[in-house]
Amino acid sequence: MKKKILAIQGSSLKKINIRTDTSFFLGLEAQKRNYDIYYYEPNDLSFIDGKVIARCSKVKFQNNFKKPVKILKKVILNLIKTKLILIRNEPPFNQHYINTTFILELISKKTKIINDPKALREVPEKLYSLRLTKFMPSTLISEDLMEIKKFFDKNKKVIIKPIESYGGNDVKLLNKFNKKKVTKYIKKYHHLMFQKFIPEISKGDKRIFIIDGKVKGAISRLPKRGSILSNMSKGASAKKIKITNQELRISKIVASELKKKNIYFAGIDFIKGKLIGDINVTSPTGLKTYYDLTGINLAEYFFDNI
Image (cartoon, rainbow, N blue to C red):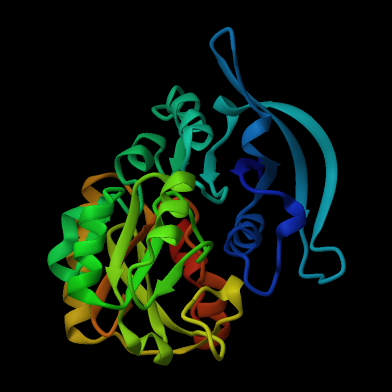
């Protein structure tokens, strides 16, 4: 049987953790399905005389903690020849990230790309959630100090999130308005997301997986002691969880909207039944953890429905 070509645009291979990495988990499933895998980082992507190419490593993913990735050879790959491209590099969703979507969009009518490059620009994670605020805690996006102070006066404890960031990086809880700290954040990030703090985060959040417009499962992520961050990369632990009827209803609404936008794979997060404003579409995670907890391999569903 002729091999199919899968290209993965990802972050550094050195960052792969086979215990939790969704890109690695998808790659293992792809290998079972007769794909050759070519891996590259965003800075390896080029456009030249009508061609979209990438300086890739042909790799083999291995369930081996000491050597999870075997590099077979280095090649320059014309990406139009691939059967499938997965965009899996981590944010920030900045101009560098956006530039790659414009380049890849040139071949998106001939090569399947997940998530679709144009769709990634139209669903910019935290900013897209502004369409869903009726399901969210009280939320402000601003860099206006007067508006920010009014928001603190009303909500007291407030979470600050950089719009372009990911993985809980630089997410802070402030118990009152601190002009110096807020101004420092504004200088670094410009517009910020502010949300009313939900203390039930101490009992964990819920990450819900959406694939091809369907709600496919969930895990709960419990912050480590003394933390408000439920990200696995920040030391949170995971457990099995059921989705409530309210969460399922909201998730189905979001899933339908994302499918209309041509988003194939996403992760959304809840705390105490409230959608917390991160519509994860750039590199959703958690499939390996879900498999470890439930025995259900959503990577199989992922490839079955492409």
